[in-house]
Length: 338
Image (cartoon, rainbow, N blue to C red; front, side, top):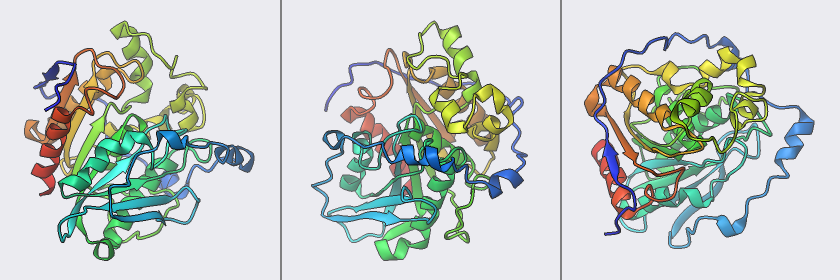
């Protein structure tokens, strides 16, 4: 077994009160908006090309269903379904959500390779594209993820899937979207204008959140407290990935930013969470995950939330993708989906 280059810190955190974290969110504006950007800006999204050399290798998978539309607002709203080469099914599902700062990335990107390992372990893997910030602002991306989950449920029989055994897994921006899908699954918020398969819920049964942004408004403060120089600069600035995702400087849209915070939707109905983060991450401060785990545990209980911190690790790569860590991730998924 491949050994990680980083020691693992398994944190047993004291449950914290959800101070200032109300789940009573006003939803009217979100239900009527898809965050669409003006056409001139939308055209810029088409100029973003993924580097094929950085794509994930899925050639070993015999049963593939590619570029399936799950909604009708944008060409970006497509997903790929990969089924195990062995087993009759039906199969539990991993919804794989790519990262890229909400502005780039693709459902065939190399960052989805760990999730795709699921097909060797009896899981169907559904890789999702969503509208990026050049095309549409919040809540478009999370609205798309939720629509993709509903599509999976509505078409479970056709693709030999188990509709009530679904996990959301993503890293970085994908981790944020996985976490937000997990906490908001029992809420009517964040649907945007996607109305396909609306009679199905977007609830999932497990979440794997790898170093996702949780509370955008605290990122700058947490980096200052940590002494780590942020690789992407000040996040409250208008040009940051999070500000572009929200459509304006975070400080100018504070009420909307709170609606993008997964902590705002935590209830006792939420699924089990596995949260993993590197302590030296220069893109997303580790305190984002520490606080999120504490707030989840305060509502769900210690047994429903696992937090693993990798001492000295940065943003992705080793030790997250090491064999021994993937064993931990799939053990968590097996416990909750099999």
